[in-house]
Length: 367
Image 1: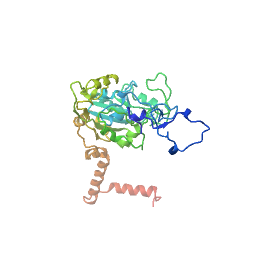
Image 2: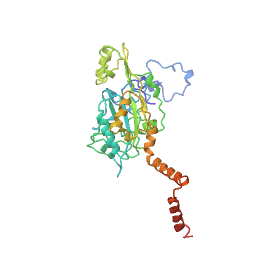
Image 3: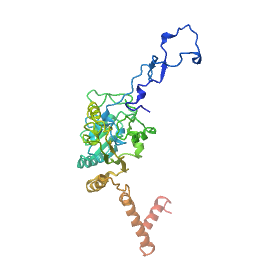
Image 4: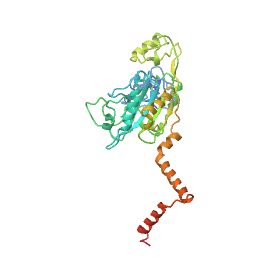
């Protein structure tokens, strides 16, 4: 499990060694219990917990992972220009997050993308759409991001087997065989899920979710797949200087927290000082396996009215089953009516005669 940002384990030594010059190479080894100077002293040389020559673990900019929502803080997002997203600023007015798992291939239909596009543009501020690409190539992924009103999860997160193709003019990060961060992949256990209870402001670094991990978490069965997540309501509040989610600085904690907010590029300290921290209630999944057809026009507006209030729509109900099976149910009803008419009403069994004639002609040789 990666060490959270600011954890003392990155600087605290895990072992002590005496200076190499204090012992001759010809001196026989003496058990530590018999050596009067075996106890570490203040002059003992500290050794890093990292292997010699190993680089310090990569930790991204704070604004890319600090957010009070337990799910949003685990995402690494980019906009349509390939720039990393400031989570607190991007989700400041958002109430609903729509995760869209999609992909395109030769001959595939773009209709699901068009429906999601129109639905997102009807609710530009309170709805955030996150594209969770299931594309087989980075080129298709970038094509599905051009001019779209949604964000995208990081492509280079270990979800794809194909290495990214080099492109010097691309705004996306340089190609790499392995992700720079330790993304959680499918079947990986999230050992940091409970840390949010001790860090409700979302300031610590936690391992991010990859696309395949999120698909497993949401039980996505195929593409296109849509999952709707309702952001929690804001509660509490520190002092007068505190802004929503600490976007504009310290808030409630005094001058130290404000100064720290400036150092972090305006991401804020979250008001963790003398005042009450500004927190966000944990969000919840409002609906899984959303049908693309239900986001069109009036149906989409009806669902949005409930999602905006944090209400669930009931998912795939009896009415949805009727719509999906309308042709099957219709033919079954016609067959049942014909059977009753023949058996009870005395109607000539035309279908039976045709079936018998076809059987004799093609299967019994006219006998």
